[in-house]
Image (cartoon, rainbow, N blue to C red; front, side, top):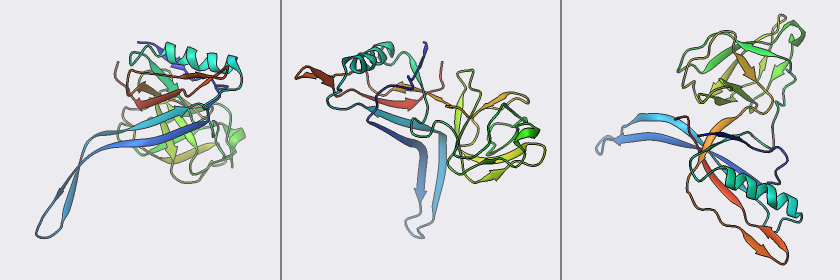
Length: 208
């Protein structure tokens, strides 16, 4: 298994993100009361779609290269949000984490004194454990402001699957999650001296 990097210049017409939840719902037929059991962590889904006719053959070649490098469902693709690769908030620099346990939905980040008063905004992405197969891409749930020393606490979803070690890097520039293909078949069309119709249906995977 290898990790494939999503090319930042890949000509993607559409990127569809989603969440696959694993909930089991029980309901009482008399009272209508409901209970929900969570069977496992939610997994991100993503579909990448090209134009039906890609104008430049070098761009079509980039798609073919990506499809081949996935080796069916063997390799994993490191996927980031291509529309919003960096935060809308103003915080930048080099960030490190305060320790957080699995199941946490808040993370305290040390951004450095120069980042005092800087922000992360609702909808921004941050990444933890990015150098491993345990990496996770976190969605910031509410605006947050760093204090005068550059320390900020953010709420996010989904919760941490695995602990975050104190002093480990928190990534804000193209944080990724790892995804495998849902199916093993890919087709594309050659028509009127152009190619297109590429697509990849992906689901988050953190298994080896």
